[in-house]
Image 1 (tube, rainbow, N blue to C red):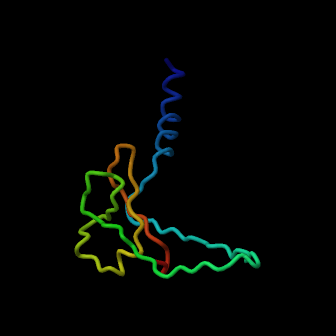
Image 2 (image 1 turned 90 degrees about the vertical axis):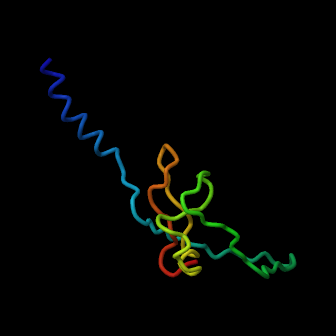
Amino acid sequence: MKSYSALFPLAAVMALTQVSCVVGTREVSIDVPQGSRPGGRGAATITKVSDSRQFQNKPSDPSTPSVDGDVSSMSAAERSRYVGRQRNTYGKGMGDVALGGSAT
């Protein structure tokens, strides 16, 4: 019985260190490496980039982008930084993920 009472505090500390909190906004930075240009293969042009994501308040499908708070109160510039939400094991939104700095 004495050995179990000695292991309980150790088990409690180990359990608490395995829990991470995903509340708030986590900013991620994306570093785009400079690629080498292949010679003589033609040209590619990107003419238009459009963001067709539709953010929703508390969506039923976890793959639908959402943010913590009211989406309609955010400007288009604010929404352009957001990637989506972090979700827990049960699919509940816990924290936001946004691009760092002024990246959009």
